[in-house]
Image (cartoon, rainbow, N blue to C red; front, side, top):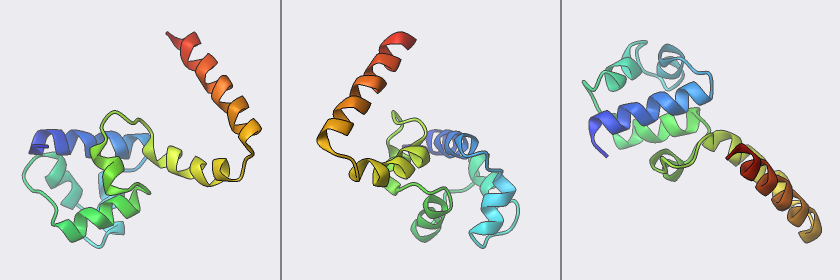
Length: 105
């Protein structure tokens, strides 16, 4: 992933979570313009800061690089609930989701 792709992915994930660059910057212990410097392709975060960004956005590093998954934070919020369901309940949810996806095509 090059700087442009990294910046675009970060921008998308922040938008999906209604987060501002300033907010994320400050919450990870950086100056208020730090995330903007990444979005403007002037900098890359260190590995440590990248992990802080992921934590702040409630996603995993794998989620960050999985550019085909929209709304990774929301998906991660749902998984603990899905783990509590029975096989029959999961089958029902799968059918509902499949119907919604097919209806959207």
